[in-house]
Length: 359
Image (tube, rainbow, N blue to C red; front, side, top):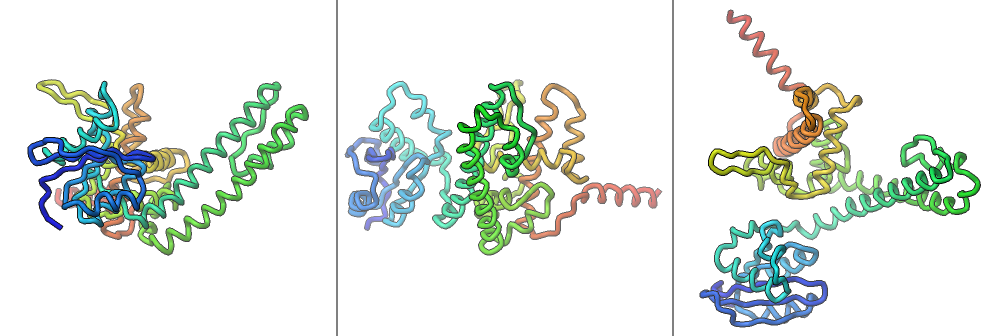
């Protein structure tokens, strides 16, 4: 197979069919067509082609398709969808046009597409455990809210309860007139609780056996099995980041930039990267700053920010703590150090003692 990549192929992946656009080194279209989004059809279409640069947008099918085409010897560029406003905001959007845009951008400079790197098949399979659990948690929350709403319509009110003990605690308080309608819902909630307990056991086993590095992350109060696993499976390789500080930006916890001339606006976080992990880190930050969070450098840092006051001070403090937590977890993962909750406080006290002795 030739090693030239003078040919660039844009692929607009679809659920049933994918649109292809092949351009030469000068940007001229030399071929257009469709291929079924199936392994055998893609293998037949791309297996006989000379080595080319293949450009596709990240999506549902891009992980397995990109691995397949790389295995066939092609250079694969998976574009970050956030960089493709020419496609998402085009007034002439079509599969054919999208494939052309991908091919032309990939021919000029793939760096413009901010290419992403897909995780391995093994990592994606482990992440499905987390995604399945999260789906059940959201379903349980919706059902619990439905039960509470149905009782409120009758003029009643259910007692406060955690979701795991919800059925046992609220069943006696459900009015007789709506009980026939709500009992099946309570049965589903009970089944979901049992399924979630199964997932908790499976995730603990997964963390202990296949991802023991999560143990050093769980040293931080507020970081449990789910958050530590999500962190490890999302980043996959800690050494891909030269600096721990880069992780905050990678997970979308860095404020967006809008600087031009003398103008430098303070904007909201970018929300790039993995949404689920960002949500888990924010939840951990809430715990750290809450009444049950132990005294730590992270908590003191967040409290200082919240004490500044202002309309959004508390929200900003939570996000800032989540960003610092992301950096801290990466540092613990890379170094394997024992976590010191009040390390900065101890260093400051030691420095003050040294200055006092010198005086």
